[in-house]
Each structure stands twice: as C-alpha cells, then as structure tokens.
Image 1 (cartoon, rainbow, N blue to C red):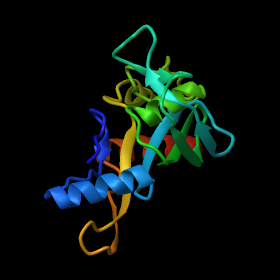
Image 2: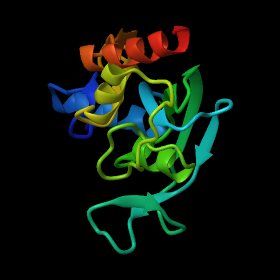
Image 3: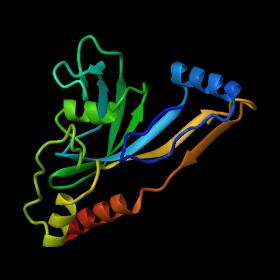
Length: 184
C-alpha cells in the first residue's frame, strides 16, 4: 500500500485482496490513515511544528526529491521528544505520503536525519561525548528513521485498528548513549 525507504525500519501496510487495496488507497487519499515515525535529527529543534512544502523531483539530481514550487502538496507535523547537545529525537506525523517526505522536509528546515547519506549534512559531534558515543554516531549505518505507529480502518469490517512497533535496537542504543551523555 505504501513503501518504506531503504534502511527505514517499522510498520508497513500490505493489501491481500483487490477490495482491501481499493479501500486502503481511498483511506490514504482521504488522509485518514495515521502514520507516525520516530527520527533522530541533526541539530537542536526548539519546539515542534509543521512543514507544509510541496515535494517533487530535484531539479538537478533526478535521483533525489526536493521541496520545489511545482511539487505535489506535502505536510509533515513534528514534535520534539528529547533534545541533546547536537541532536533531536522527534516524532513525525504524515498528512501526505510523498517519496522521502520526512527526509526531504527535515533537511529543508535545516535538520536532516542522522545517518542520511542522500539528504544529510556533516555531523556535529557533541563536545563532551565519550569515545564510544562519538563512534556510535559516526558509524550509525542508516538514516535514523522508524515507522513507529500505524492506524487505519479495517478495509472489510470498518473496525478502527492500530499497531505500534518498538524502536529497533540500533536506535535504542543510540538514544540510550545520548541520554547517558546528558547525565554524565
């Protein structure tokens, strides 16, 4: 029904029948399907907010997406869960579902995802970070993005359904190391 970017972990919807597919597409188009993600961003956000910016193909690099005036409407809401010296742990909720939407929107506001090789920026390491934490940050193997929650109306019964997926071990270890740096 929808895709997760390569190296993004978490929940995904798969339709098993044409009837289910048709109904789930309707829910996606009506924006009634609830999709929430957790991410670790470079930089420190002061508060949550909304990015309402159209996304389309990058004008020069056709492999990438970008915020462009001729793009399709895209809205991402974000809320800060925890701030660290040079990073922020956030929850993002999608209203639309454009390719690489969270990655493009967060980079657009100057806070790309940690480990994002396509839309990322140079990592600023915390000044007081221990060597293990520095290594963990520098070697994080993927963009720090996880599809954490999914809610929809069952396509046949109409029952409201919701699922949650815990953060994967690599993101849990990353956040724990950052929390320990704050305490130290």
